[in-house]
Image 1 (cartoon, rainbow, N blue to C red):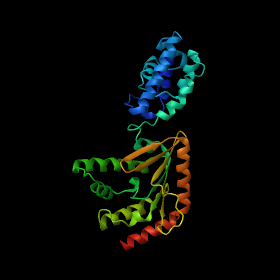
Image 2: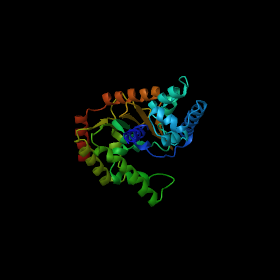
Image 3: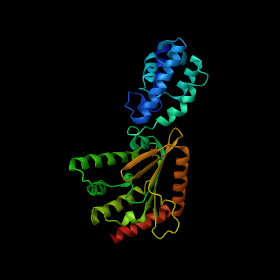
Image 4: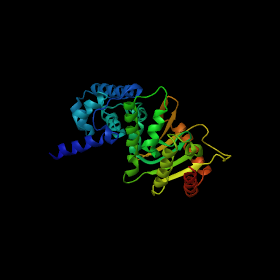
Amino acid sequence: MTDVNNRVREDLSALDGDDEDRDFGLEDDSGAVIAAVGRQIKLWREAAGLRAAELGAAIGYSENLVFKVEGGRRIPKPEFLDRTDEVVGAGGKVAAMKKDVAEARYPRKVRDLTKLEAEAVEIGSYAGVVIDGLLQTEEYTRALYRERRPAYSEDDIDRLVAARMARQVVFDRRPAPLLTFVQEESTLRRRTGGRMVLRRQLEHLLELSLLRHVEIQVMPMEAEEHAGLGGSHEVIKLRDGKTVGHNEVQLISGLITNPREVQILEMRYNLLRAQALTPRLSRQFIEKLLGET
């Protein structure tokens, strides 16, 4: 019974992330990568003359988990690949797939922004066109979606607003992640949704700025140095030590996982924070705008 309990605990830790402890529907190239990794593991296992149960016993996992990894329905952790490589005598060929698996950990359309933010220990975001989605009031968000063309139906707007509001649970997480934002001054002046919607949005920013794990900075229009002219972007540092970027432009919203590209986004965001008003001066700036609105 002890062996069975240990095997169950191993199964629960064999997957790369809490949400991977169940079947999932990977799409696009990410799903193809995970399926290909699974097929390779099966081929190496069969070449070694091992049944799935035997491989599982040798590497410390259950037969069921081995079958699901081989079937492309589970993402194996690096330890799973390392142990399998040793047992089947792959000479490093199975272990070498860790890089491919790591890149496929954030597939398009499945590992969405909300899931990543839920795993974040730090989020840094620069917004140059509208108020950052995590900072928006429901009224402001609704006004934004009503301006989209082609026009959304009211049902679609309700669904989209609810989805954006759901992301804001990140403010209530414990332990709390560090949340930093750089907002372009123009976004704080544009009367999206009308004067009262903007007033309530500015009030909301002031309320959030009082949270100890939140820092909001304003990039003034008079600033002569600006590292964010390439567009809005987000840098997300995950609890597993990885860092990913997120970019959103017309018709395109995507994750950036290439380390070199993520490094560039980090560098630009750090410069933006240095060039923007300090959090204290930014709060005073927003208070002044509220008084003028």
